[in-house]
Length: 430
Image (cartoon, rainbow, N blue to C red; front, side):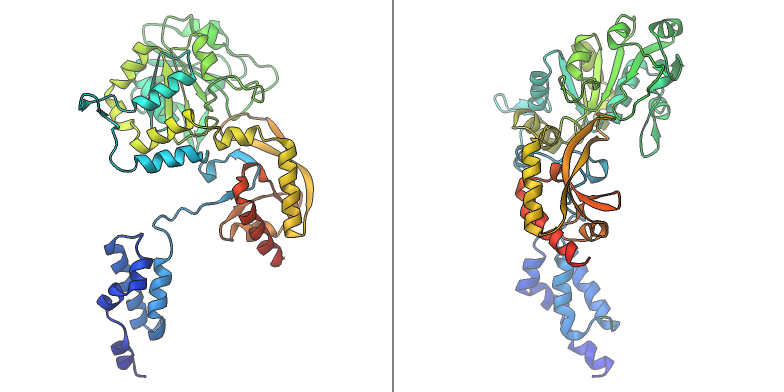
C-alpha cells in the first residue's frame, strides 16, 4: 500500500470520537483531552509510526491511564511517615468525607440562618475536642505556612528570638531563617548550638522583640552536653511564645516519650502551638495552629491568612480523621507484633519463597527521631526491589544487607493478596 493509500485508509477523527469503546475509555477525561489523544495517534500514523490497523487500539491504550499521573504505591518500607510517598495515607473515613465534600457543601454557610458561616467550623470543633487545653484553632495549608503566619502576625518588622540549636532546615533545602524573614520578621539567634538557657532569652529581650519561637526537634537529635529552655520556662517571658511542635502529636504517647505534644505545650503556657496535619496526626496536609483565643483570632484576621487557607476537601478530611476510627499512621505505629508476624508468614507461604527475619521500622520524617519499631519482614533477593517498584501497583520495599526486605507494617491487610501477586511477579524475574 502506498503512503497516499495508507493515509486515505486512516479512520476519521470524528469517527474515532464517536466510537463506543473510545467514548468509554475516555470517560474519565475531558472532551478536549480525548480529542488531543486521538489527533496525536493519527499524527503518528501519518508519520508511519503506527500501522493503520493499530490506530484504534493505540487510541484506546492512550486513553487507558487515569486522569492523574500520581500512581498508588504500596509502602512496604516499614517507614510510617514517608515523605516521598505523600506522608500520611488517609483513613477510610477521611476518604469518604472528601468524596462527600467534593460537590456543593455548607463549608462557609450557616444552614439554620442561610447566612455566611465560619469556615471550617466542624474541623475547628474537632480539634478543640481533641486538645482541650486549646482555646481556639486555625487551619492553613501546611506547617511552614502556619509558622510564616504566626511569626508575621506576631512579630512582623520586629525580632523573633530562636535558639541556635533550633535553627533547622525543614526539607528540600528550605531553612528556618529565610522562611521567617521572607515576610518581614527578623531572626535573632540566642544561646549556643548545644546549650541555650532561659537567661540567654532574657538577655536578648528588648523593645524590638516581637516573639519567642521554640522549635521542637521532631526529626533530629542533638546528644551529649546539651540543654534547652523548656516551654514552661519560656512562657514566663513578656512576649508571645510560638511553639513549632512539628510532628503533630496531640497528646502524650508512651511510644514517643521525647516527642512534644500539643496538649502539654499549651498547658505549659505556649501562646500558640503549630504542627503538620499529615504526620503523626495521620490526616491531610495542613498546618494546624492551636492556642489562646485572642492570639489565634489575630492570626485568623491577618491578611496573609486568606492566602494560606485550606479548601473544603482538606477540612473534610481533617475533621473525619479526628472524629473517625484510628487512622493508618497511629495504627501502623502501634501495630500488634503477633499480627505483624502472622501476616508476614502468610505472605511467605503465599509466594513460596523468602525468609521471615527481624527488621526495624521507623517513624519517619514526621517525628520520633531515633525511635525504632521492632518487627519482621520478608527477606527476598536484592534484585526484587527494582522489579517491585516497576510493577503494577508499584511496591516500595527497602534494600538492607544485600537483601530486599518487604515490611507489611504500613500495608493495609486488604492489600495482602495484591502484595503477594506483586512479590510472585518479582520473584519470577529473579
